[in-house]
Length: 152
Image (cartoon, rainbow, N blue to C red):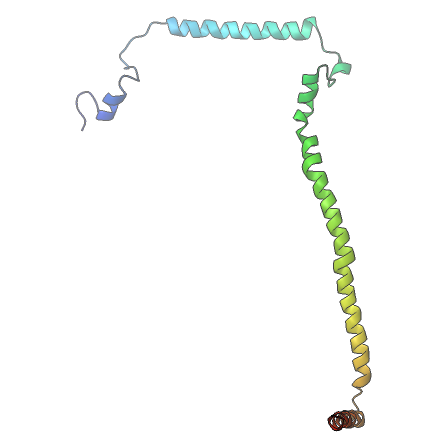
């Protein structure tokens, strides 16, 4: 419920936020300006020292001078480690699986196709479409069954 001093939430946050009627001296603002000028001046002097007193030669750009720099330039050797630990073993596995697929799986599929072709070539000779051949086959089958029954 609002009162003359604001809402409960405003009174709760009052110690955190300064009141607008409170007066601060300009010391904080002056210190921020002075600090900003000091940081900018230090940056300009550092850049002048690094690039004007000791200029960079184009032929030295990209050369590693220390082991730490080499380590950082090679991105901590993460790519090499990833390649050797993960990529190369997986490529070897995939090549072995591809050889297995070409040799065994494709071999079984091709063998199945050959068996079906031989079977169909044999059954093509039996199924001629002539009724006389079918009757002769049934007669031969009946003779074999009768012969088997008589031999028992």
